[in-house]
Image 1: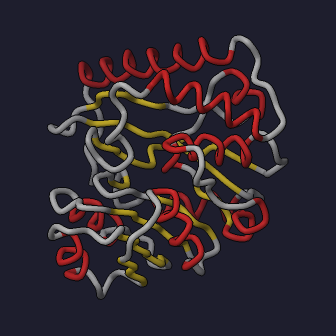
Image 2 (image 1 turned 120 degrees about the horizontal axis):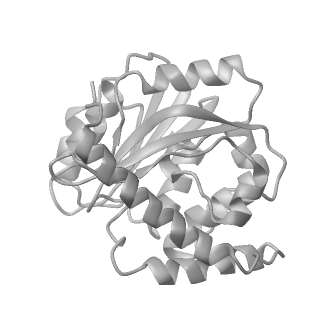
Length: 260
């Protein structure tokens, strides 16, 4: 089974190398690696080209934002399964893709997800997202898997549609809502950590100060799909965020496995 990994980047010269090496160091060999750059003006592309022997496809051109870039990567992919790892973030360890391939081969599934850790500049846990076993009604209770822990069969991506470009930074939520709740895909959690994403990386560059705005857009995501979230939706979503911070504090206190 071939796994397509897509990395999007834009002016990420400080952290793109770690992201690329987290993919190129994977022990799983059937990997198609696609890097989509938004026409960076710094040294990002020079660093990317250092790894051109290990990158299947490199795209560097202006885009309409990160979700347009992701869509370009998906359209360029040829793997059986597609996943993301944004610039500044890393696959959790060198065995992640082995575990993902095995999970798909042993289970009759269309998609999967796992756990993630948001780390600070010293690689210490800042927020830990340990996802529960999959149940569709979890989405109604404010749950969402870590976006970059989600891996989906490529055929389903073209069947159900790619990312919308009219929802700002909440396009990932609408995407997951559509795939995990509004359609009847066969989904199973991989009970393992998939990624470490970094404060200030591509996926968290707008994290601070946008939490309430994102909740408003999440409600909009339900409405544009002809659904209405329950009244307890937002309080439970915010409660989950608080729980993740407390879990991260426990990980810092008792230690967490380093990447290999």
